[in-house]
Amino acid sequence: MMLCMLALFGAGAGFVAVADDQVEVAADESRAQSVDGGIRLTSSAREAFEIYSITGQKVKSVAVEGSSVKVDLPKGCYIVRTARWSKKVVVR
Image (tube, rainbow, N blue to C red; front, side, top):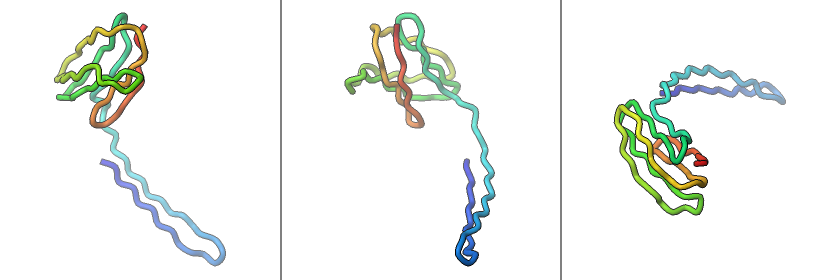
């Protein structure tokens, strides 16, 4: 959860900014990384991954829960997407 409060106060011709930031950073629970001949998808919780070609065509949908899965793919550039992030991955 991110809590960010910002208050601006007028001070004549200028402004004074006061910020109070409290940020809770959750451990990154899922990731996608290039491996020989494919992409390794890892997640500590249930996560749905979608893999797209660089032209935008959906190549695969994979659900991973508390493990690691290798998806075999031909060489090329892919976009891996979850509900929280997306990443470009190059398969060599």
